[in-house]
Length: 293
Image (tube, rainbow, N blue to C red; front, side, top):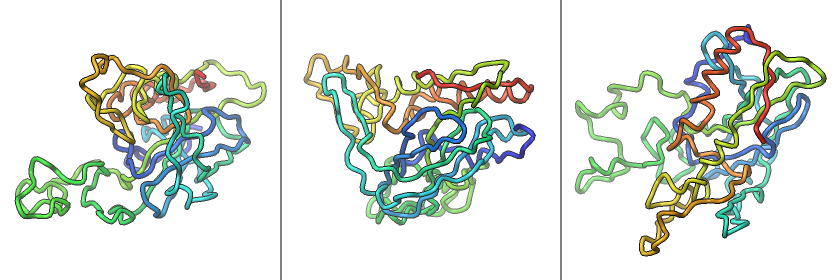
């Protein structure tokens, strides 16, 4: 498997938790070869969508290999998904299982066990589905820089030409800028099929990914954006409540997008699992991958 060519991280990675213009999750955290993976995806606006599938590994140092592309089954549903539901208010449990399937991927019967991810991509770099647009090259959710706005000038315009204009005017562009930054990751595991023996079992830390996931409001540790809740609502805390600083979720659902990397990258795959997988596969270990749930 690792003798196959990979692709550089500028093609498969995302900035933080990815673009909030496109977020989603897989309906199953792990599958066997030959199974179908369903993806529920929400877009902020109706526009072109593509879902690429990658496997994490060594691949000559590139880190991932593109194994295919998901089939879109209802792309229009992505811009019309209903709000997620707080199924257990007392536990702050949010669930987006009411979203429609937008894409599916049929795992090849001979697929190698591993940690896979879908990269949901909005190819339009300017986000023209959003009437406000954006000039930024990093898919940031911040449409303008509040510290450098100019009186009387449209804040959504790119910075004026000058020595500190950065990439907006062609100067000081990011050396490793993502090729298509308006994207986000959806993680899943492909287990080993049949009775194949493996030298090692690699279990992902998916329970930790989700414990620190704040999608809908709170993580099991509270909010890492205090005094605001997490995406998508980012509601302000009621600071007059004497118990406001102890609020947290007591349950987390796997049926939500993962935004943990925005504020706790250490608890996501590309911080812990990624270097371990690179080491194991570079050195030829025969690994069977599985999730913790």
